[in-house]
Image 1: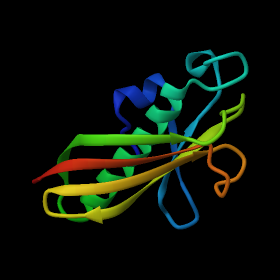
Image 2: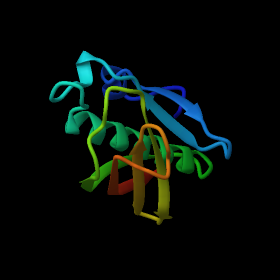
Image 3: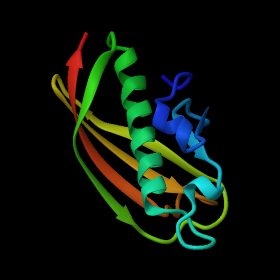
Image 4: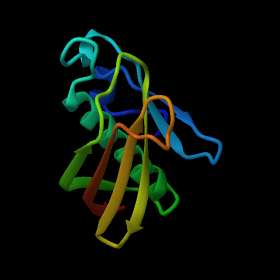
Length: 129
């Protein structure tokens, strides 16, 4: 999944890389397309980045089990500080992969993963192949 991001990820200018543990991390460059108030990221762009990171992490986890389709059930986003005019990264972590429902958490950060600018919790319905 990391090599074929959804169309919305392309709209945000996202690229994918893997961290030291091999987990997918999405990278969003700062630019006019993600600008909110002057010098800051738009909250929707931050939320979209984390949603895409969660989707990539979930598809990555499902690939090992034969794959599947997912549908969002709900999304909760917590904004912790304003995203500045710099590159932003996000990583999704599957906290529960059940038979029909998955729970995923994602964080977005700029300089230090230990100091996130936002966090999200998402639940997805899974239709396994």
